[in-house]
Image (cartoon, rainbow, N blue to C red; front, side):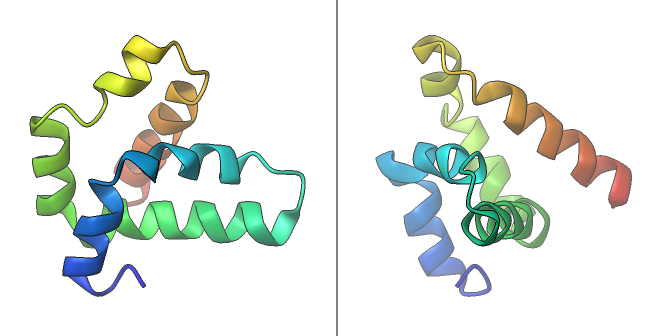
Length: 84
């Protein structure tokens, strides 16, 4: 799914994108690992698209909403920088 950039754009800019963090925390390993792999793929394959998302305030919902998911985002960003 994340290889097709127009679909990736739709998912990334969707208001439901924040649910990706919830899926990564599910106790079901298959769902959590698939969500984490998809999230990592988006961050590493479509860097320009992610930069655009961050420029237009894509993270404001995480910061303002007080969600505990922001720590997960910080972790994945740090891992992507270390690995690649």
